[in-house]
Length: 109
Length: 114
Image 1 (cartoon, chains in turn cyan, orange):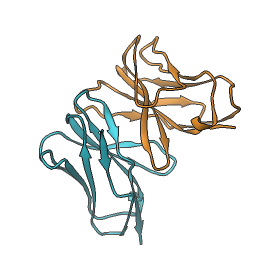
Image 2: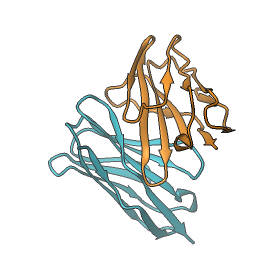
Image 3: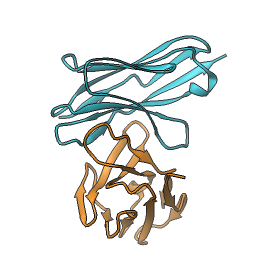
Image 4: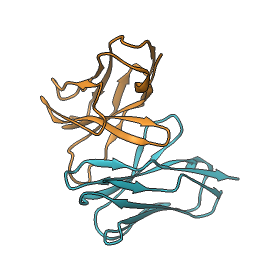
């Protein structure tokens, strides 16, 4: 079956760095997305990885290791507005997008 | 403004009363999709469409219908809603399915079936 695992909840302090992990087992791999979803709102795109390595975008970075079926999202200089759920989604070999259940991040002052 | 719109945003209905949730995008995207989001289960795909007149089942299609007669619109139809279809529904679109094309999500429709 297809499976994507993320921690359910994480907490961190304003100004700190947090790493949200995602492991996946899918029928093939054509890419991995990270989305941010604030409570009661729609998901919004954060990053995309298809090759191994780190993609940096301002305070957010995403890493991929295809051989390990593993990705992480790194958030630096945390702000209160970063409190949200972070969704890992994998495109399988039919390009279907499979979402994890999301990691709820709470940032405290 | 590039966007995906959904209507209604909130709906409370009774079992068996047919309803339609509309979805429209103004970005000329080919790919459109419907998801439902339930606590602990994440986003699950209901139906998707690669282009006009082309639709396919996702992971949880039972009890739903869709149509794609125009590129911009992708309505979700519940012919006979049941309480287990109480959920938060999102419509999404992207330029294409394959590749690094992010999906743009609508604001969501919170449906309660009593």
